Length: 47
View 1 (cartoon, rainbow, N blue to C red):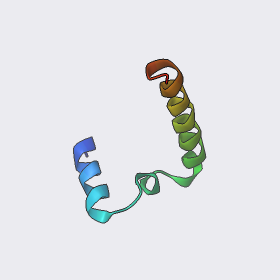
View 2: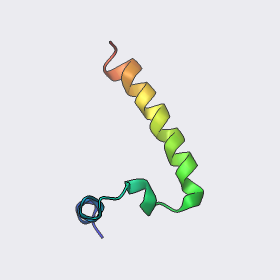
View 3: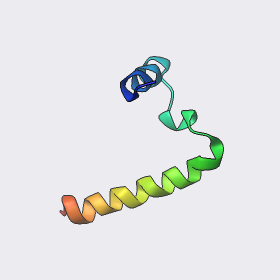
View 4: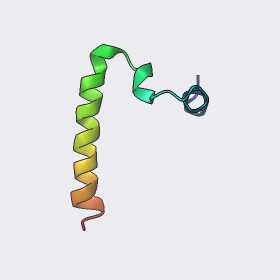
């Protein structure tokens, strides 16, 4: 399934995208999101 199709399912179902990820990976994904957000704040759009 393509990413556009998956995104459409998430939007139509009004569910959080993290619900589609296996539970064992959710904490790691949250951690990576936090790290990436911090990187963006510091390096890409400091302000």
